[in-house]
Amino acid sequence: MPMTLEQRKANEAYFTQFLKMKTKNYMWKDKGNVYDMSNGRTIKPHTMKDFVELCSIVRRGYAKIFIDLPDVVEIGGVVVVGDFNKDKILDMVYSIAEKHYS
Image (cartoon, rainbow, N blue to C red):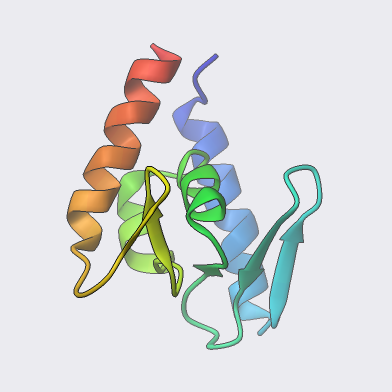
């Protein structure tokens, strides 16, 4: 079942409060995901799985500003080397999410 706009906004407020508190790491224990928040401005997932799952519960605009790509970008089991276009990756993530939840 798709998340409502209100649920996504609530998730964004939840994560933003941790950024404001200067939390170093956040662990989403139900998913086993770990997020680095040590720079105090953005959330950096450790893996692409973590990135996709976090993006799936917030709006795209929030993800674009506050969620960084992990150090190792892996798509379809292949490690991508070089410059990454975060917008294109977000397009893929949200396109798949729309198909999955519609």
